[in-house]
Length: 202
Image (cartoon, rainbow, N blue to C red; front, side, top):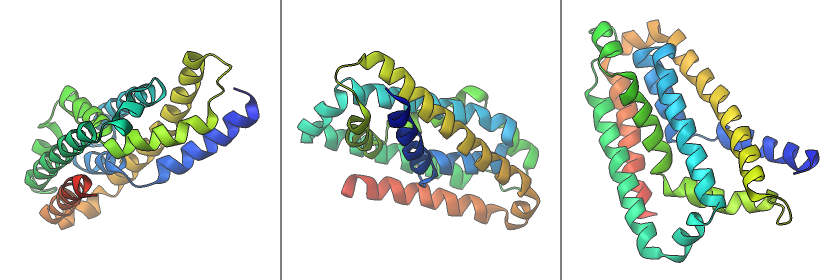
């Protein structure tokens, strides 16, 4: 991959990261509920998930999903169901300012990591997007594995800093979030559930 192609891909990756999605929303929510330090587990889980999705897209599983409407439908419903479940968990979380210590310690790092990972890999629209997006930058005459490493590392780097920024901002405005208490959890829980319901229907 030459520098010009990589620079164009990197710019596109920045644009993609800035587009609102489940993982950015999850980083925002966890940043407010658990603080930036604990939310790193969520972020790293999502980054691993994105690397897996990019790998699947580049090495053919994404093409299989495009060819199989039945498999795609199953994945859509699984992804939607997971987002609904995640929304319920956020909705039921202890309100900020009432049980702050409990909310910050109720989930371990492994649980936060798995939520970030599953949020990335159960989103079929993300898989299909990468299937359509990545071929624009692939050189068929170069090593596919090397290109995967470059593309995955670039996107993961960009996404890490974006989600860290979101989580940090959420953590810093926590005094204000404490005032809104349960309404914060209910709002973002509702957003997750709405995405989960709408995802399989589109």
